[in-house]
Length: 113
Length: 113
Image 1 (cartoon, rainbow over the protein chains, first blue to last red):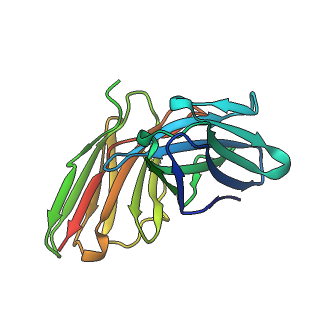
Image 2 (image 1 turned 90 degrees about the horizontal axis):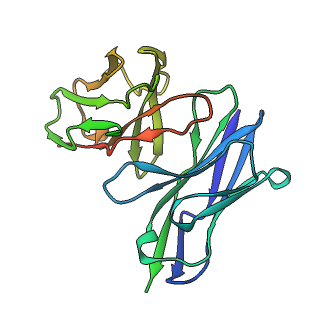
């Protein structure tokens, strides 16, 4: 069984501030972990993925996430928010051997000028 | 790589009418997924195919929903008859090898009046 919990349906930050979006997962087998971003009127796009190599994963647009097995977490961070980062962010988990990823409910990132 | 292509982008129809949504996956991807996204339920997996064969359709809400994949480059999701509660954004996604992420289309926004 696998599940994903994203803490906070909305996160609001000022432009230039640190972005932290939280994701906790459960999986009965070693997981693949993903972060996706969805801009208005578009589909989900892959930001980054963890597949068992380095625990700190760097993605596009300056985002990164760290896999912490002891905490079952895969939080997404970015040192300095840009207005263009405003979007919906989804964390997803897929256990090895499973064909279906499980998505979190999403976190809406709001960036204030 | 043109990505996953969905059509139409928007569909407005009256209750009781048949609706057909179309998807062309990325060439070489052997998994295809249909999702529905609403504010209330988030992203819901409706059905997925492997090598054109439906594997799990347990997410299809009712018999009014049906999906086909006649070949590796085309899939349809049909709703007959449509109801206002079917209004949502429907996404198609495809995936290649183990460990690879889903690639989403831009979705079809369905409005049933």
